[in-house]
Image (cartoon, rainbow, N blue to C red; front, top):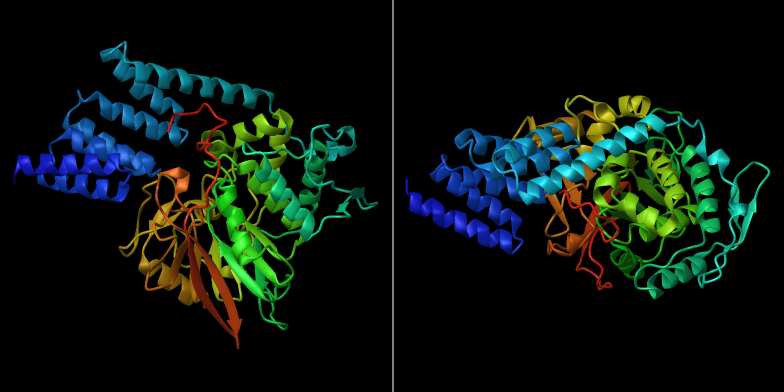
Length: 501
């Protein structure tokens, strides 16, 4: 063993971290730990990278190990506080910050973080105290109460409310969508649509999503495909079909996909696999565009829910603050309710199961069980619904604890058993950055698709799309990779003061 070699590896890890090569930084710190497992700094540095990768479970493990090696190393307590806070374990975070402040009362970073967490704790307590369980918040909407803002220069939307209560946009068409995109791009900081249009869109989407199942079935076969339960409807899509991974508020990349791959239409269907919002500073524009496209082509634009379509994540990663900044306090609650109503899973051609996170903590789950049991829940912390949104693959067989601190990690044998049991070609998921935009794991049966290139303007990854072809009863997949599109110089999470991650 060479302490000098371990120090050299640590320095290489520091250089990789500074260059934002996070995977290499993890590798270097891990090798340093293998050479010298009794240095708290190595574990703490790796925890720092874990936090940047949002692997908060791993960060807690490394920070705790650093503390066990050297209880006086205060930076490890700070790392653990950040990780616990980002898992919404606010009281545990405050405990670690109090330890730091008992040793260093003037530690500015610990003081600032404790103040911010204390504000969050008070706000959550207040929100819980005033919470009213509204049976139907959409019933209170009267879009006619809103006037068109005088400075609005975007496309005019003709709105008609039917006797059934549904909303009809009588002039919504392909040209209108492109005019909306042009308008959003014309004001570099993000143009706003009139609140009248937004609230009418809420009503329209509520009606659409109320009629969509939690487990959705789509087929590219012309006719004759039956639902797995023999009862439910199967949506038939003809022509092109594209699967999109995480977008994370990167509006200009989304538009680039549409301009190169074609906008959604009756012969050009899309499945977006969750995480439409958060991080990127055009999350409002992304979700509003997707909702209008869903209103125009309800059977050709499919929206799976991701883990970032939830209240906790939207508070932490920018969407709540962005919506309240752009459209006011009152509008945010409608987005949160619409997110709850999104499907969790789409079964495509009876060949591929598409969901945001991954597989389950038991390998013998049948599709018919999912079809029957899955519920649209507000913020699932356990059960099948949570696992669909949160789990990740690993290279080793079996299961292990999640590096995120929620859900599990599952191996190739789990994927193999699940696909064999359900007669599937494979599973398509998103949820993790892939430097090439996509990856194939578990002997090709598990595909990850990630569609936010240069994620957060810092990762340097490509984005990708999956193109699905269905010929002579066979489903085939091909991939297109993209570099990041140019966009105005506005940093990620520009509308939030939250910097606790």
